[in-house]
Length: 105
Image (tube, rainbow, N blue to C red; front, top):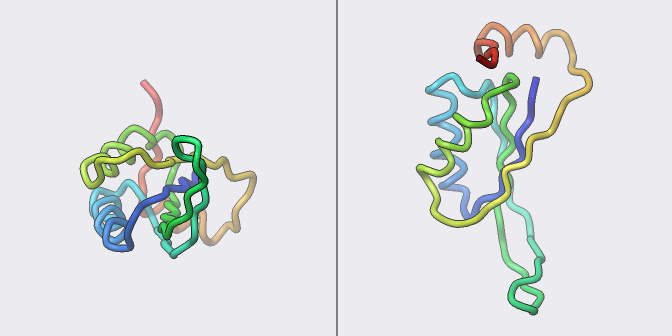
């Protein structure tokens, strides 16, 4: 199992990306929620609203997931891949049944 942590500007972007990933069987489940982001930009500290999208999927789908994200947004965002040490068996069975495992060629 793999989790992606993605920052976006709006809940609508998260909604659109989530539905594309689910329709293409690139993700089993997604969650999104509002946060506040503080960052340094051109020497100044900025603060603004942001949305985090969490994508639950199989390993080795990074390229396809980033392609879907890039089709929806045109700004620099964070797409961080988080390795999962363990997950409950019932969730893993559901994941394996819905999202095919992908091997690298």
